[in-house]
Length: 182
Image (cartoon, rainbow, N blue to C red; front, side, top):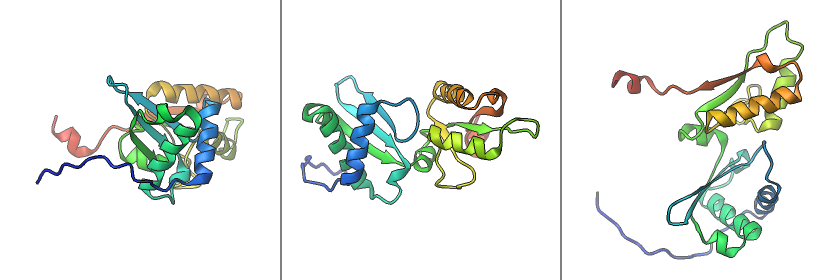
């Protein structure tokens, strides 16, 4: 494949104003759970990679997601901080899962004898940040690490007393072709 080299141009890109303001509020709030999930990674150079996982991106083109993320950081943290962002991505939960970023999932193992209903669990999961984009009846509560998933289980158990045994953490195991190459 040919090699192409270009210089960065700071061409103005459209940011989605309403989402910028909501993301600014989220950056300032620093909540423990819910969407959006904002993941910042600092490289040894001091530059940042920022991923914002948020189902509200669903109808927004990728380029506008990126400019919305950068604009929100500029408004919340200042221009100098935003200039450190080398990579910015906005993904929905299903997109982030498909990209391999969210291998852990919290699921319910509700029994008939449990004092909760499936609706109780569903609502608590959505409040915790679960996505209903793929199936509104089966929320996906996904995380990047086992520690994050376990922290969500703890919060869910506190929200719904007596539900400790209802929540399970699972991890994607990969595709069959990956297993056959071992």
